[in-house]
Length: 390
Image (cartoon, rainbow, N blue to C red; front, side, top):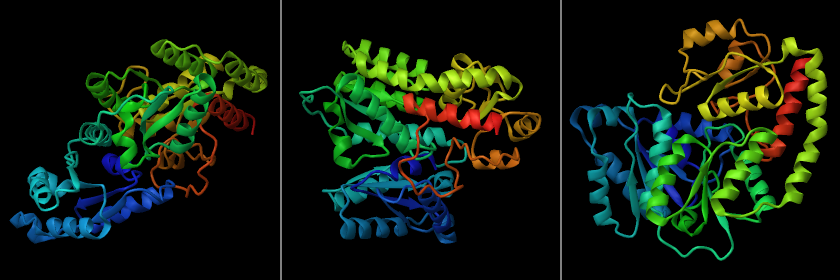
């Protein structure tokens, strides 16, 4: 699912999953509910008992050939479901044969489909393989530009967050985005992203891609999700130091001044409602850590029970809890909860402060308020204070 959610937003491409039709139908519904209605063309080969027991791959070969001939995509992604991955279907070998038949189409196989990997590995592999196989060496843009790595459809508000990052970097450094990978990218964007001057990594899974681009094309990168006013300023300082550029002080001062009344009011409210001002957050480690840091360090809110969904990313402060553990702890929490829909429902929370896209409410408005950056900070303060005194 991590691979699917990463690739599904890429225009000029097609994706073929070697797996059951039901899995792709579920994936398409999740994507549509998350606001993804344009981008990669999605297909499933379907799979039956003979494919599994006899290792028959003719179905995926026929489907791939049909897609290439009819859609003529720039790139065809081949994605295994869990069953072909477990029985050892050799997708790279199939791709090699298809490339001989269709030399003008790039065909990329992905391998993170087994039961032994989390969706984070799928995101990481997808981002890295896109950079390795599609990105080409191009001249740097005359004016400073940047890429965003790791804006993917599994995060709630993923498009709004990317838009806020672009707005701030334009205002602070007069930089434009060259490629937003992958929430607002086409194949040509990914091919030419080496022309940018810096990569902005918004999640841990994008670090390997950034390291590859640094080694291959000499591109520096900054990794951080900028939450809160202080967190956003620290993010800008890192970018400025990396590029050797001063920021537009007038723009940054204006953003800080616009947020000052919200922060002042929040401080006044928290003095009287401190007993209800605790945040429980659950989801991706980078999101949980950033939200909790803003809530506690900048607003002085209490630390609630918070956890991430990856044991590889977990720390002592943000552990990875099993279902039984978080169900016990969230039942004792009295305060704000930000999580995926199933956790919010279990906690009996009626306000929809979502962090992950897991197929809940339909997201029909692509211009919702962000969570990151200056406007994200004001949005979070608004949500939290209303929840505390509501």
